[in-house]
Length: 339
Image (cartoon, rainbow, N blue to C red; front, side, top):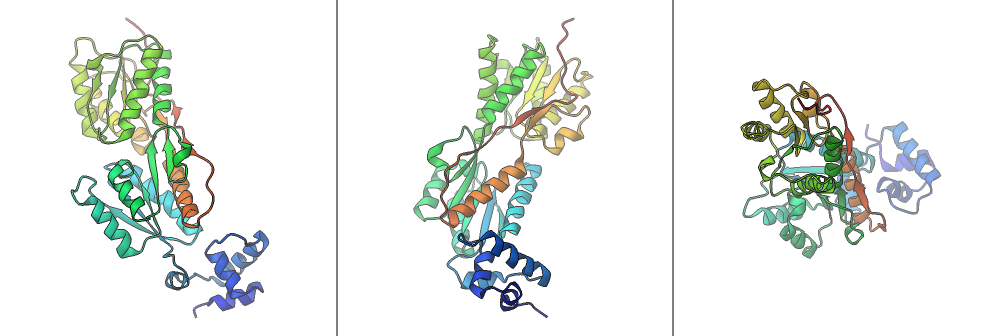
């Protein structure tokens, strides 16, 4: 037998309207009342009807996660983080993979929002960095939150969750320098991702601050993939003067670089130290396990979703949300010992 909202109201000794306000997480409901209604819902095993909520409101209580990213681990962590908040706040999630380079990508996203009557969107790179898309979403009045690489900005605090890749990259490079490495190579990620440029700039900044020249032949173009790490490392191993450390733009690239080095009989970390970025499962599945920058992707996703729901509810947003990935030392790095 299906439990109704009236039965929840009776059980909690409140009005049907109060139950509805608690379900929709509206402001102005006392915490004691919320607790009482939620306890009644749990005891009766009541699940609110999404259709009924939508009919009683201008909201659909559904948001979208639209992405184009080759890193499956990143996408899974993002989905899980968004879903956690959606479950807590009684929202549904529509997940839509797409091709960010498609000529009609903006029209595709706008049609999706209109067709599904979405209340808002969570966008990740490279879509979150597509200025034409952002302009069109703003023009249409679509609410959205962007997860982007960079330093937090107060002007866009209501629409952005920042990941300070540059500061983290600088910290990683300084760590390698402190281990005695001066010949540090860098394998880049996809050029259309702002994170690739931020991480490269952090690496270059650290070298310059320590008085170490930036060697152009130590910077290798790439993309966020295992194969790119393999190819990048192979290129670096052909140099007359090989690097003593390789900084890869993410763990997938680092795992590929480690694989290529081991195929060539290079002892990691005693001959070459290798670091990655993001602390994805790739960093824990290699041997030796990778030193990396710990990036809390699920928490970033939760923060982005909570920020979006605040937008949807027209709540005041005052704080800048910025994450700073932190160094996580494992076995793929060691002090440089000149022979």
